[in-house]
Length: 338
Image (cartoon, rainbow, N blue to C red; front, side, top):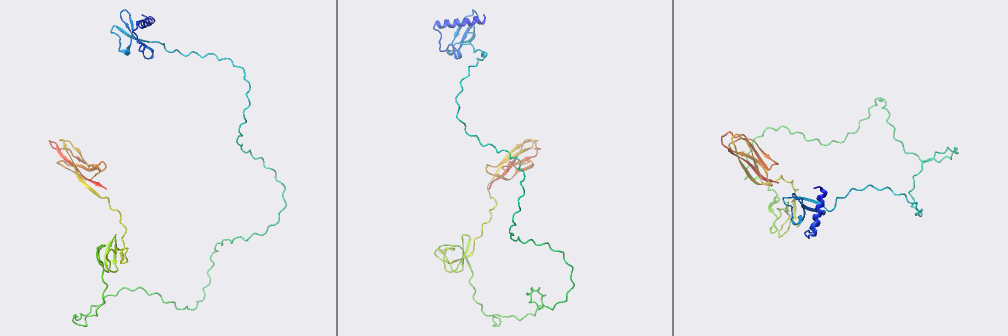
């Protein structure tokens, strides 16, 4: 059956279905105006179905579809231009525009000819004297004159300063041993000397409840103070006049080197198969660094070094010469480094 005949049959089937009241117009045609139908392979019977309600074609039918409305046709060619209309009347003049900006200055004209020479003017008054000029360069040295007669002898000069003490001379020979002097002999005992000044006594840090005598030394806030008399009952050094500064506190020293704390040893064991070498790595906890490390086991290691920013310790073991696996250990000494 040709396409036109098939389409006519479909339209007829749709009209018949509508007359029979079997078409739900809300679903036929469907979205976009599409009509779904089934065409019988034997007999050529065409029927319309509603796919929105789950209806579908039988095995003995072929599913077909068509649109209520054909596709939009191509745009037609543009029509010929119309004839020009008559000229309209001239409109009224618009308001005057604002004045434009000032134009650029024109080029200078040619120079005029020289005028006649004028008469000489009167002589002006004398100006002030100019500043003194710089000294001229020194002239060449003159020839040496003849030697003059010797002058009279001058007066004696003042005595010069005392010279430095000369080095000590060699020691003289030892004298003869004198007789012993006994303390019981009045001739051997000299006169009694004057009483000496009392010495200073260190009394540790200042105590506001302590009693202090003249010459007692205390420490307070890094400085040393000496009592000038009796002090007690809260006589505070630096506030009370009963204390005199002995030694002021020095400036603070430089900050010491960063400290190390939180020591911990972390180990990692690994069984190396026969004939193989291996890398064994011990990893420190977060926030700690491997400040040292090492390895242990029957196998030798060709490297034992910090690894990955000092957070791990790596031991690289030589191949296992034994017939069975050998367990080796890498260990890291971990600590918090400020």
